[in-house]
Length: 321
Image 1 (cartoon, helix red, strand yellow):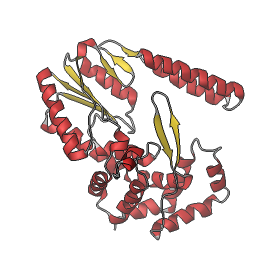
Image 2 (cartoon, helix red, strand yellow):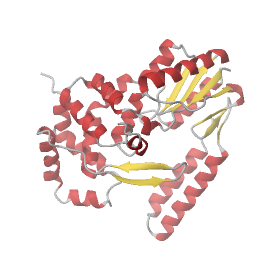
Image 3 (cartoon, helix red, strand yellow):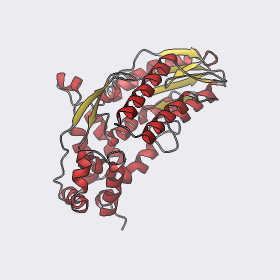
């Protein structure tokens, strides 16, 4: 008999792999150091709590970042991150089956560069584009709608119970003020997959019902292409209605344009022949490099790590056709 998803999630082998993944870039964190002192026993304790249905989410830590824009980052406790990785280790293939090909966020072999290069391919076809994103996307994800969507994903009670606990452990500041059950924390690994899945039905709606000529989505940044500007305006109207009625989401004002004049997308200006970094993004990258340099000089960051981060920023800025 094939093992259940839940039994795979709770296996010691999977939890040990999840522990290894959760430990990456956390080697100096106090929570990791404390866990490592008795790591074998601690992994077994997580397994026991999962199997006995006594595992609960711990308290989040929150902090704000201000570049490229102000956002509230919510970090789960180290042990919770192990459970999140354990879930995704097993269930990532199920998430993948729900996604259209041109969804690029948080997927192996995809990413921002692949999304931008695909936008350039569409740009060369001389079509019109519609650029959209969702107002306060992570804060606006409705818990009941997400839970229902996840039940369709696995159709397995005990695995879904873990999803329910993770979703119920957080409500956005905006939703709390309105006494609503909405929002998922930006810092969770599971949130990346939840957010990708939440819009997947809209992806299929645009391609299969509205018949767009081209489509790209990177999380909630959306590009839709058509040979007809009139068709794009109809697509926008219908998609905005779909998102409001079925997903409780509000789209920001649309941007329509001709592909041959360039497409602003993911911090780049994409044309038929070039991919340029937008000026505001260039200033932010320069600030990041200065900040990394200061960390290296103060000894807070090693020279090797500093060089790796700066090289990654420069490589992104030099992205060419």
